[in-house]
Image (cartoon, rainbow, N blue to C red; front, side):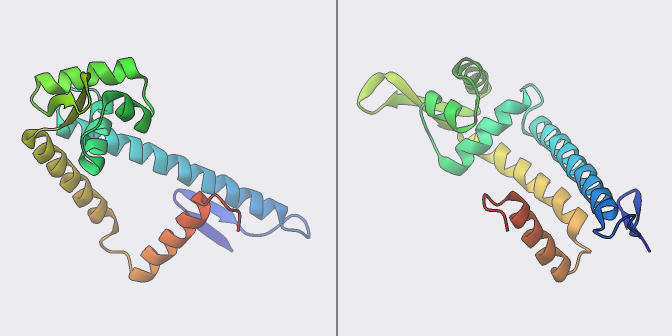
Length: 165
């Protein structure tokens, strides 16, 4: 009996007693779907970054989203948190400050260092962008049953868990 996964039809008949052929086909189909998910996520991130500010690189939205979630911080802490090098982070922070998306102030106890955070304008733009992302995600899942959503959440949790099941 064939199973349809995305654009793939999998023949569930096995060629050996252990079922290695159908298992292999399922694992390949899973890999294809994970790749499709990663591509769709990357595309959504690119659109979100452009929605946040068309004149900035997508990495700037990553910084802004982190600041939105965690609040003001030193540029070095931001760079570490978003896994970017300090130079790139500093350049993006400078550009974001010049666009009025970030505010900065001297760091308490070390006036040579600064703390950056989202300005009111920056917070509004991040919030609007996240709302837009949420609408797109909701549009993709609004017709799903609660059982389907629960199943996907559980399976993704198992897939991304540090512990094998």
